[in-house]
Amino acid sequence: MGEESELAIAAVRRYAAALRCIQSRLFDAYPDVDGIKDLMVAVRHEKTLPRAGTSSTGVEYAVHGAAVR
Image (tube, rainbow, N blue to C red):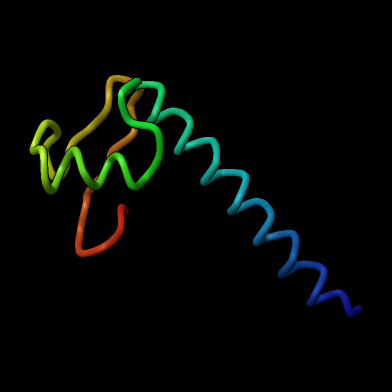
């Protein structure tokens, strides 16, 4: 494997680790939410959470289409 490939793999691993950390912080703020699916239900169907906001743990989120940003 070349150096460029190794750098790309390392970048993807850092991104995945950061995503896990952000998700953990977001879900810590909403104990009733047990994953992205539950977050989508809370926002889109139950309307117990706003479509966009900042959690008590400081994570800004926005639900759009079929995903969360």
